[in-house]
Image (cartoon, rainbow, N blue to C red):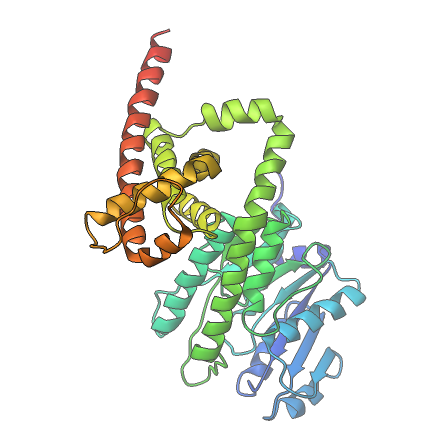
Length: 393
């Protein structure tokens, strides 16, 4: 039987440092640093423009690498400068730990054990957000972040906001958009896009209302996070998803990919029919300019075949557009009154459509819904029929 190596003995086998970003956490900073030093002397402290007693406390730790910002620049910039310094010092991995006292340095060994098993991963400590003293806004914010991370990467995590992490320094992106709290979202999303394994490992957590100081500004920081997620979602839909699709197709071979992943995919006949229905609905709806984004968003949300949905949405390609517009206006006329009757001939102009915008929008949505339901039902019946014939053979 292979002998079990104690976790403490594994630490020297990994070339890592611990980065501690800090801003006005003088109550807990010394305790955090002392607990880390029980495990490693490789500590980089980033004092992000603190105005409390932080500078005095750090004078007691002259043996440690220190970075001092003259003014507060944000947690993201503190981490970015910490990463830069760690790379200059030739460290392979960096563990980040918050200075507010919520984390236990003893969990450092768990990160090292995990990275031994799966090198080059990006590890995020998963906190128990249901325990006592955890603020409800923190729990909600984490669930919100988890959802968008899944949508943008396809990876499901239990905790995407924990500051206790291990980063593979040579693999993560080198340039970033953000400097504040939202940086911790950007770095894991863009790392996942690069193909880096991003996963959770369980950690302990301590929320002490008497000592813990949070610098999260609910309105400003939530707004910044929302803006970042908007940019990441657009990038996901317009670039990352198509890129990954073509990479998979090229790797497998386009013919084999089309036959196995699209026509003969593991999706049920119902889900294939639902993808067709979604494409028809989006293609005929009055969402001009946003159809592809909406299509990919809902296909991802409901886990439907994006290629089938996209091909179906092309029902609105140029030769059919005049008929769809007229059909929408005609359908809308049964629900919205109009003084200007419309006739499908050369006299129909864009001005006529603008004068009947409400009629068009209402009719378009009704026509799209009815067409999607009918097409989806017919597709399901045909798919079921051919599937049963195939099984009989």
